[in-house]
Length: 188
Image (tube, rainbow, N blue to C red; front, side):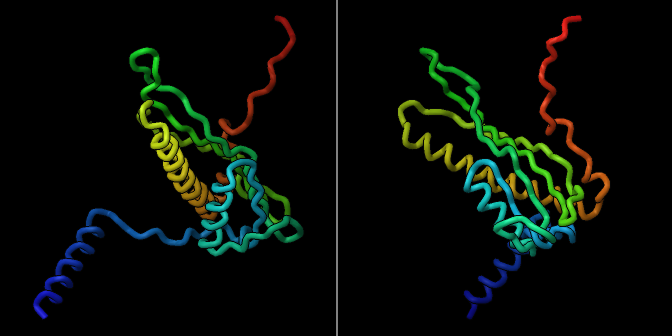
């Protein structure tokens, strides 16, 4: 009986400590009403699409397999990973890399009007590369990409939530999301 009381007391203290430090369980993100039914069009990683759909569904959105009348469109034309070498060791061996995840997305409502203008999000993680452990490095990259996907989905959901609170600002296009115009052939 005493050990059970002690366990309850310890768990209560842990819960109080977690809430005091600012920790809160993630709640469903309320999305714009026009996104009640949405078709998700992703160009890129299958894992990213799957996690994005899961996040939308947990927020109460009905994800449709095909677009159509009365269905909003979440368009993700860019969802790419790339890596950069950050530092080199002896014999010009790479010792650190950065993994970048770039995503651009926009949302149009069921009536074709913009809900969220084209947005650009880039996330980066750095890691050390061990040339003697190629298998471990591959699993490390896979884990980093999984972490970036989780964080990216949360970031997109938070931006969609912001569109509920600030609809006019959400319709604005992020200047970094628009590709630069092609170079001009005109000589000055």
